[in-house]
Each structure stands twice: as structure tokens, then as C-alpha cells.
Length: 163
Image (tube, rainbow, N blue to C red; front, top):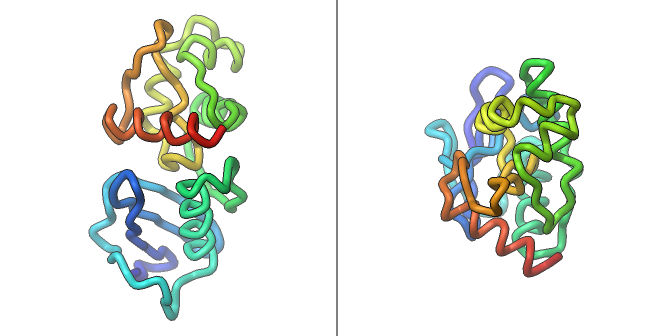
């Protein structure tokens, strides 16, 4: 964990590989598939670690243990109005379920925008917490995922196992 201004960075290990967490004050800004160069993977007991990073680590552990289906973290997610509509709708896709890019476009009343939905998903700064891994191709194929398709497959299999 390291501070940069008000930001704190923490890298954690997970069943799908290392994750980088970024917080600013009492809100999570990012959950990354690549560890943050500013953060360190630290032992479980940490002095000086902000509460929201401890909470994020705990909730992610619970998610990977199959005990958590929804996150209760305080988030700051900056984006365009369109991106925020996509990310908000994405949070309504239930644990263990999937939808297509077209389904999501229709849900936000932009039925002709599945590619723009895909672009918004690619800019999602809160991997897993804002579950872009639940969006698949119209034919059911695994497509387009910032963490790579193998991680997407693992996340979907994990949720299917505990749904």
C-alpha cells in the first residue's frame, strides 16, 4: 500500500491473479486486473490502510469464496453520461447471469449502440465490482474483455458454480 496525494494503492492476490485497488479517501476508484506499480501485495494485517481498501479486499475475498454476490463499496466512477448509463445498467445484471452487448444497449434505450456499449465496457475502471465480465456476444461467445478471455471465462464459471 502506498499513498499518492489522497490516493492509496493496494495490490492483492486473487484466484484469477493479482488485482490492483485504488482508493481516494473513502471511495474505491479502480479495481484493475494489472497490479498497480504504486502498490504492494502486503500481509493481511496492515497499519495505515484506509478502511475502504480493507473493505474492498474483504468483499473481493468473499466474492471469490462464493459468499458475496453484490458489492457494497462506496465507489467513484467518472465517465461520460453514456458510459455511466452503461455501467449502471451493468450492475443490474444478476450474479451468475449474462447478457449481450445488444441486450445492454436496449436496456439503456440505445438499441443501435452495441458497439458503443462495448467501448464503454472497455473503459470500466471497476473490474468485477461493475461486472463487465457478464456481457457476452449475441451468439453466447466470450468476446472483448480487458482482463483477457481466460479471466472472463474463470469469472463466469466461478459465478455459475455459486449461483
